[in-house]
Image (cartoon, rainbow, N blue to C red; front, side, top):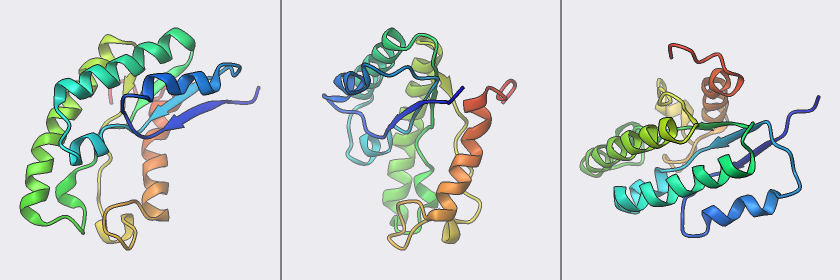
Length: 155
């Protein structure tokens, strides 16, 4: 059986309508990489709760059998392009977003992955110092794999 997945990366007022783009599809896995832009754009935790929580409800309603996995917000202080003070401020916000995101996942039947460990920022980030490089995306995919396939018990 072929595996089918849905993946998109931002939360916003239109994010709950995005699943409608996939109405005719049967999905086994849904990987959400949501929260980084909400954090860096200084969206409130309550806004994130409303939008991400609504998206989780919409996904669960449409694909109740799919395994929904959420990848938390990265550690801002590890991004090479991030000025130190801004990185610390955004990291405080990221921790709050991650706390809320994890809570919403548990409440709404999704799997919160653990935070991606950034072990080598120079290799893991692209030349802009903020987005992932090819090696960074590989590390991210390898990190998420156990959550996607369900080998995350006790993680």
